[in-house]
Image (cartoon, rainbow, N blue to C red; front, side):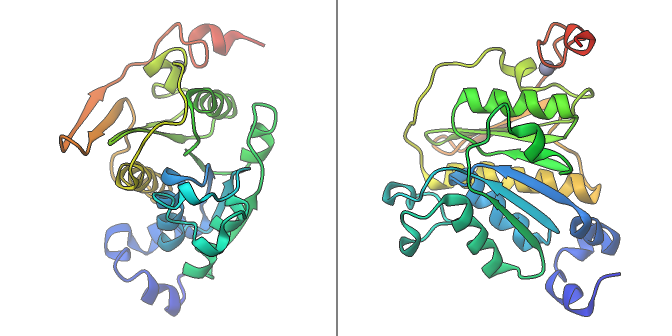
Length: 246
Ligand SMILES: [Zn+2]
């Protein structure tokens, strides 16, 4: 049962999600890896939406050059760990949820333990190596996750239900070389908003997920499209050989 305070707070969501959907959000848990531009939008919307348990992992500190797009962080938190800054920003918006700050970089070694027990993971990390690490870890653990990427004014998002829908390696193969690039806040925000919507839909059991397709947006051209994806039977992460591996 929702409390009267929850009915008031979520009055605009309950018509869409139902009381049972809102209760499912309260029971739900999401781990967001990365409290940068994409993570900022995702985390703020998840906290506001009433996801009951939200964890955020990031080992970096807030720098002045982050403020242009990473709307979780503020001038007075320059130098603070980003996961701790993110936790403060979420707590200011919703005191009725549980927030866990993980002030460290997630690695292939630590991901299984950190992600254990979470219903959904959002990849808001930087760089292809981290994204493939999150993909491999979530597929191995069987945890649904949303992959996000941004470059300049372009962004892309897909959701994977491990063992059922294409994973990131099915879609992209091996990681491309890349480094910190230029980007604008709205591109990060678009990807993070879509990821938050995927998490909310998954937890509440509403709508159609971005599975088996990749959403690609370009805010310079203002074009948005989805391209279909298929599982790769030879995928090293989720293909037949991977599932036979010990
Ligand atoms: Zn795959």
